[in-house]
Image (cartoon, rainbow, N blue to C red):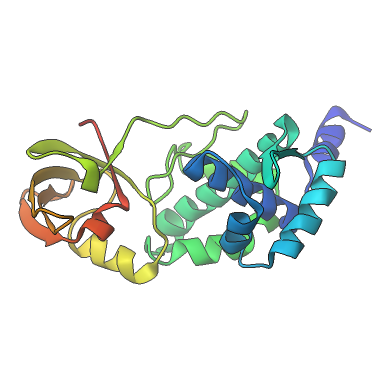
Length: 234
């Protein structure tokens, strides 16, 4: 068996395992912990189903228990999770740049297909795309060797006014919300100025400018929507 064949065999994981480990990683990133009940909600399955899968992956050395009802990825599990993220996010970029999908369409398409694409195909896509570093929603793409760099950012609803920055990423995959944000030029890379906010969690007034536009526009958005927008270069 060649070195390449050994590597391919070691790296191969089922789509179900890739999804599970990827969601576990994302849950840990979002909340600094992984609780069975919350992971079940994220995956859209029952808590007993999550518990059974977790036991299987613990026996395989991909996860371990953390506290009474928590989970954590092992180094091996983290490598698979990051590879899954790389596959999904590169595929999302490919769908947008090469097949004409919009940023509100790609998540559902990539979610159902990315884990069935082999490493070589993903890397050929990455080459065609000039090695993208972010997905269409602004999330960073892990490198081929499993490194993931998160840039400092703050949620828009946590900024003081006046504050100037750049939309780094948007942490929702809700199609209608993404369509609406697109009409406001709140895509990753857009310049944004926090102009002010109403008291007691009221609406937020902002000014935006798309990288491809010479015009600035003012908008008022709710604090709940603003919480999904991460601002960099503040």
